[in-house]
Length: 289
DNA sequence: CGGTTACCCTGGATGC
DNA sequence: TGCATCCAGGGTAACC
Image (cartoon, rainbow, N blue to C red; front, side, top):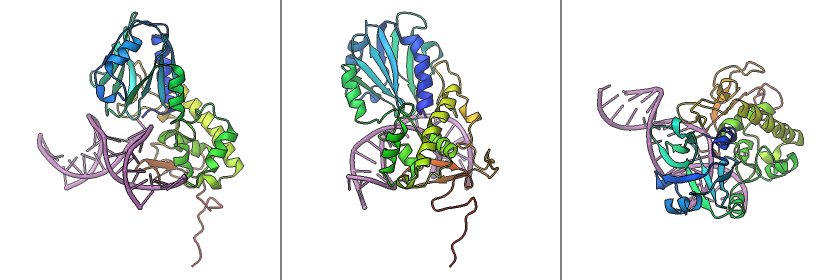
């Protein structure tokens, strides 16, 4: 679930609870999520010292101990945080316990796809993260994004979701961004024009900002804020989850398709506003035989 | 090497 | 009701 707006919402919820609080201890309820570390190492790194900062990079959360170590948590599909008094009855995988109310935060993850890694200091964590993640979607400039995208022949949608091209965009927001930019999701990234890149770059900023203001996207029971509340973006968006409903701009029913390079993840777009590769007008003209 | 799929997990929804 | 199948916001190893 969580893409950049959901993770940003989590981090904003965690900051007032964790920053400045001293860690009483940590609890690893499900060691399966740990990678290259142990429950003992995490507790040794964090217990007894204050948390200095909670950061976000792409879709990942960084918790920094004033003592130096950094915990990097990847929520992936179903991971999320709750302050302890609002946490889920099931699926709690990890906890920070702190010395002041509300007592701590839990990391919950139904599908157990989330990952938790420990680094000795911020420099080491940053270097390791930089091997997997490009610049954050809220910070990348248009020139860098354009040059990265133009170097791949893949369809623009999977390219936008490639965390090594730009970090933070997932399946929901890729659809909204490409609709806002009026770019067809299957157009090869390398064939896009300068104005397309500019439209995409601007749309990234607008869509993510609106989504953060709405506190992200919730459906089913997976993503919630740290207080257990739902995000409101899917009530105001145009494409994702709106198959068959009219496009807000032209009224054409929103199409839902599967495209290459995305395994089985669905793609939603307006077949009129977002021109197909080679399509010149809003109407598809059949090739003469 | 670049692009694509398979797989890691769980549980809710849907279908027979 | 019971059981099988499909589906889901992500990331990456393995494959072609």
